[in-house]
Length: 317
Image (cartoon, rainbow, N blue to C red; front, side):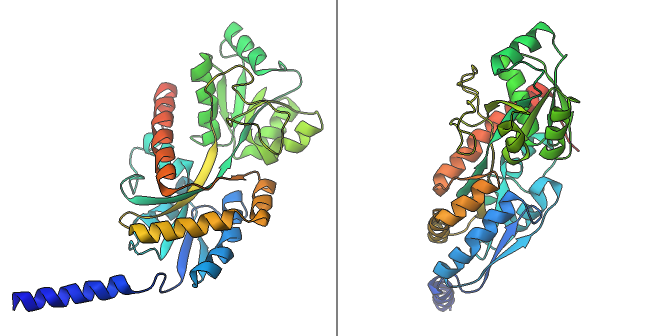
């Protein structure tokens, strides 16, 4: 009887594993509202993925709690590849240090599929301020606490990017939280705050017009949208990098063959010229990766931002 039962179980498991993937539509949970760069890129790649996978890939926005609500849906879904999600740097790396509790563990409950895009930031200054990063650092050292920088939200990557500057340059520039990059850029332009860490689309027009100074870009390499703006390293702060980013994830335990298939189709979709153009217009740069590379990025970013959060003493409720 026991042998018979084992045979039945084996046949049932074999039947499930033998089912072609995907066997039904795929829900693509985007953890942010419609209209932003993450939503735009998801909707740009979904039709291409659908065509190759032979099933609809349906984008579903589930925003809230800094991206954690949507990611939690993915973390708790069956690990069969029919629910995947878009998760950003906060939910996957920094939030674990910022919040006392989280509904999921980024590394234990999720399977990385691929990076999707990175979001560079500018350090911008009002024209009355020093015209270089070195000048800002010198001014901040001469009068600690006299300078302030605006950022796009408490605990955001832009906030942490400013605190990383404080930590690496050994200075104290006061952080001023705003609701998004647009208001920061407007107040730097108006002189209400001397400096700002902002996303590129919110500032690029005024930078090109000479109304705002972009002192440095936070990426390791100069960006396509502003090739004349130096990196922090070129501007005098070696080793600095602070980018926003987001990628695709699945529930932990998703079979490796499904992870690899999804990775292949995501990377193929991101390579399309029209997807790249749409991403760049939204201030993001496509950044496909292998699952292993994405996992390594998550580990590295988690460690880095943990040190910054601890040093700056940032806590969120």
